[in-house]
Length: 454
Image (cartoon, rainbow, N blue to C red; front, side, top):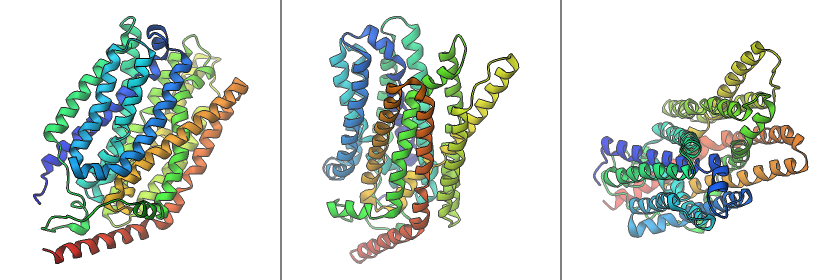
């Protein structure tokens, strides 16, 4: 098997990263254009927008499960690269057709269709990254992917809001056209430059192996069951539920909540600005966390990945609790200025520390899971995040429905659940090194079996 050059690896990663960025750019257009859609798109209501969000989460969850389990079988017939191209084409085309949406039913159909294609991204795309790079580089690469997600979402909100609010009726359509155009270019880049790496080739256990790694990677129910017998995986997935519960709920309601606290004429604009500026902390946090985790793996101190994550989450969530729950002084200009500085520092630092985990999660999955189960565990990560998102929004919505004054308590509750959920990383801490060793021994055994047939 010909070794993939560093240049081909680089272009493959860059094209997948750009696609991931643009996927979340397109996803970010809807939340900031709810009022525009209601006014401009025939048959659209606020309740109808809620239906779209719920159905997208449900369909996306099904797609994650489907491609996480059957993706390997399908790629046997058409190759993993072609499968990745086809599924990306589905969401790119679907968002593009929203540019000419005549009514709500049309828009709903293509938003559902987009969820089918986007649901395949993590199980397929992230497994490709895991097969390109060795363990000592994965944390950094997955951290950059997390940066792409957050930056893409922010740019989608920004450009979606600008085009939707300042280009006249139907301006939101131009946001979809912009997103789709760049997404098509990213997809073409992957088609031309992307490679489909050989499974297992980047593993240390197969270093200098000259043959073809033609191991039978067939996934069975027993294989999946063995995956969930790994305590590291179980502990992290339990955390991901609480993580999705908090982050998705805050993503939908934080600006609304902050606007209620700020006593000013343009409270909505101020709240949006504060939320976006505080969120900048996520960007360096995603990369720094992954780099620190890789550094510990390189020095053979694997549990460093867990310590970085656990400490970062505890510190970050505490800071975010203060950020969201501290009263906003508004009596004098000096108090207002000082409170702005304080809130920005708290928000940025909170988001920085709380995002240190993001570069390490998928790297850990890659290290404790055999190559054939990586797509599956990556898919279940997305499934658990969606489940948490649904639970979180139901919790907060139920409190608001009873009394809007319960909103601060609801915000505290989801943050507190997130804090408790971070303790599930202790399970990973106790089992991670042992399960990495067990997985490594299995891969060494596979290599010896292959070498006998050379």
